[in-house]
Image 1 (cartoon, rainbow, N blue to C red):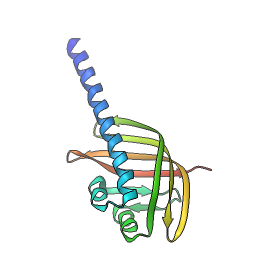
Image 2: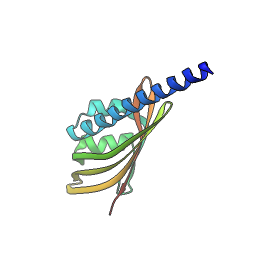
Image 3: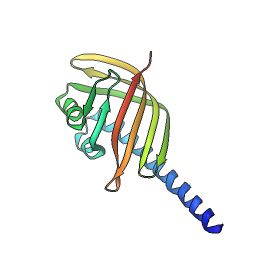
Image 4: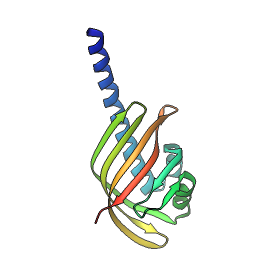
Length: 137
């Protein structure tokens, strides 16, 4: 019984630590995207990234990263509200409301959406593996 209690407490502590790490990774993603920190983005995006924009466009890491680096897509501000993080071992899900504005293909955008991110722990660090944004009316 004591062993079970120790394992339960340890699991909760690891889960809380993972949730904190992922919350920090989420903030780092928003900062890197808005500041154009491509070195940081390259480190935090999983090679198998699936990035689904609020427009429905689906890109892999190369396409998403290429759009950002070329200036075709520029996020000027990303503001997340009501962020929740649920850790599941070496994976975590982030859910939030997000307000985004910037430039896409030369046209300004200002979008409110619901955001889901899937983060996975690879090589000792958290990587963004999937992004799904659903535009709010």
